[in-house]
Structures are given as structure tokens and as C-alpha cells.
Length: 95
Length: 483
Image 1 (cartoon, rainbow over the protein chains, first blue to last red):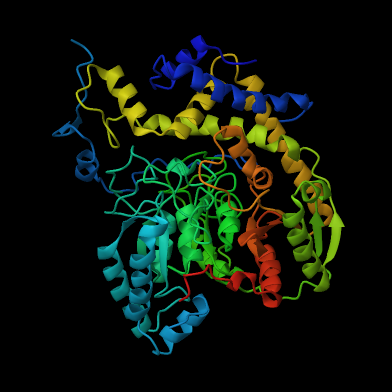
Image 2: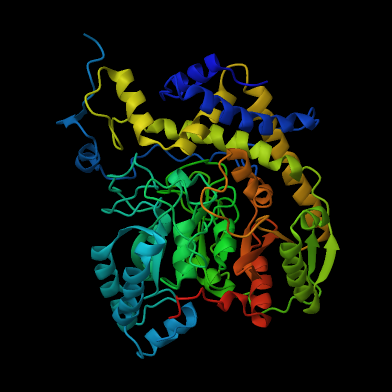
């Protein structure tokens, strides 16, 4: 299963990346060389194998939903290119 | 002044033969002299350095010193350092000032270690040559026309050139071990969960692990003992007791069973194979028993890794949207344009490739065939290691199929990915593993990988320390960098 030109554009769109017309073929070739390599995983029979998400088979540790950190609002908002009082600013989404 | 490792500097400081400031000046001068040429530093942390020197001297004066008090280091530039730039080697974070400290940074700060700079790295820790850094490639101090390995290439080059006694690094698929091998130093990645990932910019969360690089196994043991420890702020942190990895170093390795994978060694070039066999013979001479083992699924490790790591990367890096922090494009037309242009301008080619591979593997209809399938392969690889560790205590393996290569030598992504063919299996299994120098081929360093069972960091460090008692390879200094 390889990726075609149309799918390159779809994937880029899902990933919120832009791909120009003259880049598509180069990107498609490089993605497909990775896909060909990845496809080797199908050589192994894994029918009865349980997938492993954590190498220690550890489960997600939960904590009590208490506030543990002091508010750092000003510092965090200052890292944005545009903010106004308590808000991050973005281009108009709803007219 | 010629220093012989962390414990030597520490003794001199504690005995008041040298001050913390004198040590810091010695290394700061070396960094100013050589870092530019090697391109191993992204930014200096001068104000922090001054503050930490004073803190360290206070610790000495109040007899509260640890072995790392007054010892300079560089942090790989993906560890958040409060109030200082943390770029992750990316244009995306070029102007990002970390609002808090990573736990690894906190741990080292509390020990009295002195931060001198933030080290260059492959963008978002994705790469095996350091050519993917937005700030330009790091050069290998053994030969400036060669790559230092990656992604912790800046850390490795700085230690190899004697610009700092140790450095932090991270390893997702080989990013500490491979640059350590290519730069002729010792580097260790602990068991997954041993070191906190809090404040470490995420690439692939089920694989990323912090570790250290230094000249010797002894120095790695001191630094790693401080770096590791349970952390409530990291939900995948392993709930195990803090351990002093230096306590076990001096134990003889007589009778220890060391496993080797014959196919891996046979696949090496003649020169690297010879060095690898010689190093294993040295362990045998010290009384270790060499046992052949099989890792039958390991040939699928690179393929499975390049599903899991890009999938997790595409998910983790979706946070970079140009809104809250990180690069934002000029004059966006609408919100979608803001997202797309900020990300397209902010990320480099390799990062975009991995985001796209991951997005594809996780897209509707493909999840079971790729991500889930790769996770099953991962379990088979873990099972392979578990069976091997029923027979042996430690596994000795190659680190890299080759020595440091030329810049631009690997244009095809898959040929670059195959650089990590021997480091990826233990990464997928989350096992502790290190690289130590075992000689030179064509004037360039070769490393040997030691892989331990879960939480057996002290055992692989013990083997490496014993090897280094009888060999001088870890003491070799690249020409022109004598202290």
C-alpha cells in the first residue's frame, strides 16, 4: 500500500501543513520509501499478541484533581504573539 | 589544569584546592574557544551560570556538597530552563523562553551542578546526524567534516572536546547512544520511566527518556543518579526508589553472563566487527561468560519504531498551532491559514516528514494495520529480550553500523533511519542501555552497546566501568582539544 499524490495532499491537510504543487512528487517519494520500510511489520504473525502501549506495561497513574501549581497566567500569556488581557487573540473565526 | 573526571574535580573543590568559580571559568573559556567552531551550543545561560556558581560555593562552604556540586554541564536544548531559551533545535521554538524548569534540570540544579549552555540538537530530537537542527549541524570534534551523530549531537561533541565534564541528552531510538559512539564518549539511557519527562519537549512519549553523556561510565553513574527519580509531575514516571548507580561499579564481573547476537556482529564491516569482538574478548578476559542469544523479532524493530514514533510525534506536535506560543506566521488570512503557515514555516523537513507519516498511520482505516500492529511487534520484541535475560545478565551489541559519516551522505530518509538498527530494539523495550568507546577505525571512534534488564542500570554501568579500568579508549581526546 503506497501513498499517491492525492493522499499526500489529504495527509498534509490533516496535519495542517501545506505542500506546494512542485514539492508533492519529492514528498510522495520520500514518504513512500518510509512506507515501504514500515510495511515489513506485516511479515510477522501477531494474531494472538496483545498490543503494548507502555514498555513497562504500566497503566496511567491518576492523581486527585486538586490545583497543585500556582497560576502563571501573565508569563504564559506573554509567550503568545497576540493576546489581550486574559485572552489569546486569533483571526476572526465567526463573523 | 588537567581534570580527571567528575570525582577528581569534586575532590579538588571539596579540599579547597580549587574554587567552583575557577572550575567554571576553565570550562567556560573552553566553550567560548571551541563551541562556535563545533556549533555545539545554541545559547549560553550566563546569568544562570553566575547564580549557580554562588549557590554551589555556598553548598561547599556549608558542607552540603554533592559529587556534582560545582561540576559544569550543558543541557540538551529540549529541557525547559526557566527564564532561558529552549528551542528544541527548531524555528518553531526559536523565541520560546521556558516558563518553568524540567524536573531533570531541577534535580541537577539542587545537586549544585553548573549550567553553562544549551546544546544544539536535531530539531525536536528527530535525526541521527544533527543535520536537522534549525541552527545548523554540529561538527564532530574527531573530524570536522563528519557528523557527530544525533539527536544529542551538541551534548556529545561538547563532552568529547572536553568543553564540559558531562551533558544531558535524551534518547528515543538511539539519540544518546549513537552520538556517544560517534564522538567516542560514554552515554546512558536509563529504563523508561526512571527519569522524569516533565519539562522535556515531547517527541514520542512512550519512548522518550532522559539520560547523560560523559567521558566515563563512572561519571555517567554520578550524573545519572542525580537525574533519575520518581516524579509526580510525570504520569509515566516509574515508582521505584532513587538509586546510587555508582555503588556497584567496582564489583568484579567474573562469572557474569554477557549475551551477544551473532547476526548483529556478523553484519558489521570488517573493521568495526574486529573492534567489537576485541571489546567482548576483554570482558571475557575479566571472567565474564559470553553466551549467544537470539532476538528473533528484532529485524522488525526499525519498521515498528517508524510507525510508533511518528504516530506519537504527530500527536504531540499538534500542540504547535501558532497561537499560545511558538512561531506564528505574519498576517494570517483566517484561522486555518494561521495554523497551516505557522506550522509549515516553523517545522523543518524531517519533522514534517515524520508528522505526515504519523498522521497517515493514525488516519481512519489504518490504525489497526499500522499503529496497533506495530504495538504488537513491540510486545514481541519485549518478549524476545525477556527470554534473553533469562539466560544472561547483560547484552553486548554494536551501537552503530558505521563510524561518523560525511555531511549530506544520507539523503534518503530510510538510509538515515537504518543508522539506529541496533539501538531501536532496546528503545522499544524501554530497557537501560549505554554506549562506551572501544577504539578507533580510520581515526574515528567506535562504540559498544550494553543493554541491561529493566532497572538494571547499575549492572551495565558496572560492566562499562570494569572495561574502562583495563582500557584507555574513554580517555582518548580528539586532536586539538587537549585540556
